[in-house]
Length: 328
View (spheres, rainbow, N blue to C red):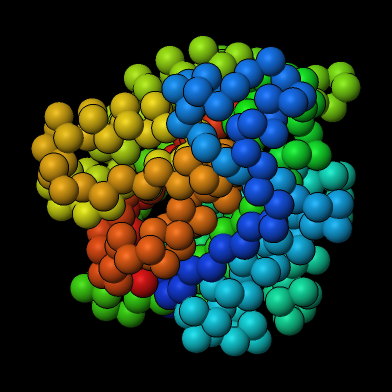
């Protein structure tokens, strides 16, 4: 005997409603790092473009920073925590595999009894979380979803390792997604994503629980493989590079960011394309870097509501993903 299972009514899509970010108070300069590892300010600026970054205090955590960013995003969106149907936390730096961050974070922002899950695709995490949230909303499984990228990378960094200590930092960024009932209101495009599992050994955690990476291998991969992913996301959204107002790549390395922007401009992106460079003052915050960069650019007046932004994340896995969004 066959049965007909009821399904939610799908809608046109999702849109971003609000943004928020959170950073620790402690600012760490290149000169301070030079006291721990053989380096100097000029060397760091020329290799990765970083001037300073934020290091979390012992009392800061993935959950506390993420909850702060999430609460700000909810306030920005004008959405009550009780209106949320799900919380997604993108992170790769929880101190233990369980309990997950999302259930704790949901409680901290003021809601329980909703879906709560973590996603670990490292620096691509926010784009993955946004894609999942968008599809949940589009399918009718949820109306409002809080997506948070939060990382405490300093828990996993050996200060004496120059390949990681000069790059990685701590912080959180968040976005609230909600329904777009009409096609003309859709503000999150289809995701373009994937993984290069054959390169899994280029970034990982060693036996001493320190993050290690093969910097040159990752640099070559990112500067050759990520621009095509970004262009695929633009194509899937039914747009051309000339339609993009803002480019927000994962803030891995300023040279990588500039290489991606150059390749997009060679494919028709405008000269006035605004390119995120938050890494200069925030460092590489993995899954937090994209929403944090947008929030900082918005606060500085570099982007406006309604701007069309291309997001593309990439990192350990190696995982990558991107989508076009309309900024709230």
